[in-house]
Image 1 (spheres, chains in turn red, purple, blue, yellow):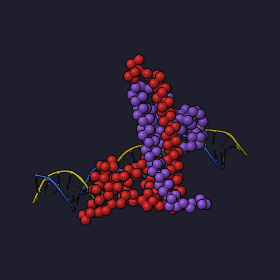
Image 2 (cartoon, rainbow over the protein chains, first blue to last red):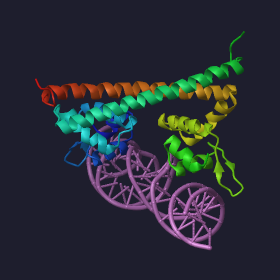
Image 3 (tube, each protein chain N blue to C red):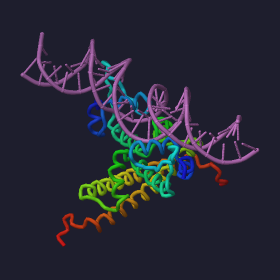
Image 4 (cartoon, chains in turn purple, blue, orange, red):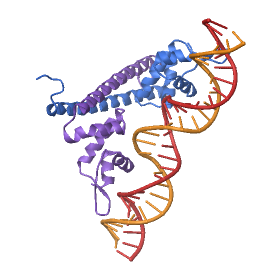
Length: 121
Length: 121
DNA sequence: CTTGCCTCTGACGTCAACGTCAGGTCCTAG
DNA sequence: CTAGGACCTGACGTTGACGTCAGAGGCAAG
């Protein structure tokens, strides 16, 4: 696949893909003329990278985790990092859940004070 | 409370509190000499702000939501925003859950390949 | 009164993940 | 063969949430 196709399929910009390559997160073959050629699996790879970004990981973090993803093997140190990141995600989910609860409470109270929002009472 | 106390209690920097004030997220009384004085409730307020930041909201977003928190009332437009943000958090939790599942899977596979990590089999 | 820590107001620095622009190349349809 | 997308490599710009430094004042203790 060409870079534009991958970008469209993964829902990111072309620039982002070049940036991922720059950071060592995504390799690409090169056509004789120097254009990047990606395997179809790159789309999923990009999705995963985005998920990790969304989890608050940096490029450097992702770079440290990707070898395990790629090879299916991990050193004990890498395993520790994986577990650490997983637990970090758990903490984030917990925090988000609390934030969500607070918002939901505000919404509930708001409905009491502004009930006429389409409810034909 | 003085700014340093609030910062310590809320686990953020003094600079952050001044920044919140700059953004209109956190008001403070002033002592005659110009020093900021916060009510004890400021600590919780800061926690909430941090939660919303963690949920990916910007200062501007938070600024738009805070009136409802403060007054307990909301216009329909603000209710819509609240609901929108709550749903955004839901989407984020879903994404994080997927990311967590992928990491957990990698960890599981890793354990197969590197089982001797303290398991005295 | 002075020592030492806290606080104040600017104001510039930082860092990540890209956006964007410039100037040039490639390639495919007509 | 030529027009016009898609692609290339730099390289500087952007944004948000602060960090950090400078220079000046405030305040409880001894």
